[in-house]
Length: 114
Image 1 (tube, rainbow, N blue to C red):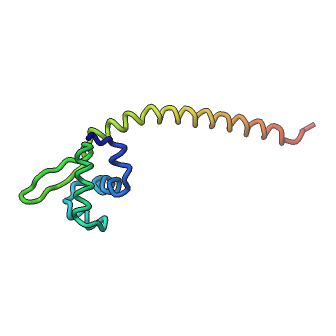
Image 2 (image 1 turned 30 degrees about the vertical axis):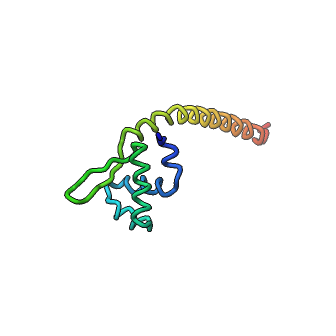
Image 3 (image 1 turned 60 degrees about the vertical axis):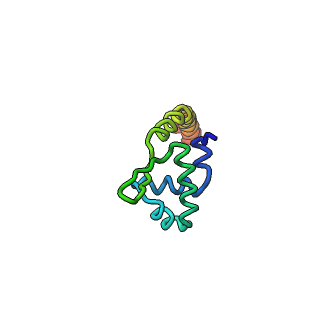
């Protein structure tokens, strides 16, 4: 079964794990402690994140360190880029409209100087 980025991140504990890993690699024990989860729960969430390709695991002696994988987040950022541009254009149009409205209201409220 393929797990998508969105379905993996939709679960709050998995999203919190990703947020923890923004600061660097952690072991499953570190993650469990910081999120106040039992280690089997943390392992289950990490397995889902691994299957989705969002995290990588590296063995260091007898420790397994989990870290974020950049590629899926770069793809997500690229996908969101189109939406970001659309909203920026809409906000720019709204700014122009509000400036025009404010300018029009200022002209209407100025007293006549005759």
